[in-house]
Image (tube, rainbow over all chains, first blue to last red; front, side, top):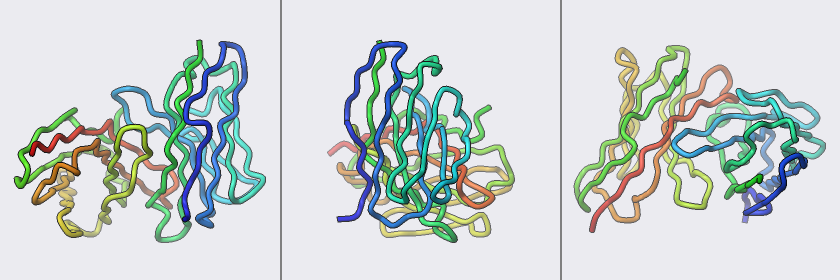
Length: 114
Length: 112
């Protein structure tokens, strides 16, 4: 079965610690994305990558970092510089070309920082 | 600055009736619009889309209407079923599709 996996489903961290969220896809998609969802708000784009070894900042990239060393993987690191890290994080992927608009999402990781 | 707005946080509909979910946008440069459906504790799933050059797209029970002059789109679900109960996100994209803006979502309740 093709799809996107995110692990873990729930993650708890102490303030001041960096934490890395995993995202893996086996859909053979070139593009991958990270979004953040807060209560009562839509999804906001953190980072996206159109191709391996390349990524661009989204609307709320401050305090986050990513890497794209493999086509299948796009991990997100939430650094201690992120002021409000507690949120629901969603990873997505899409093909490129005419179908770029249609994104496939993973199940999400809920991060709680105390 | 909310470029995509879903002004109704929730909507309740009787099973078998029509559900109409609305969405407004401000950026006339958007060229593709999408609806996603999300169940609790899951990621959103793509439902239906429409290009800015069209005014209607239909897929089974789901129809999306686009009114460019009013910068408004709507999703019609006919007939509504209890399994349609979920949060529906309106989204808009342009210039290659990599930067998609999502609305805050509308929670639909379909009562049996």
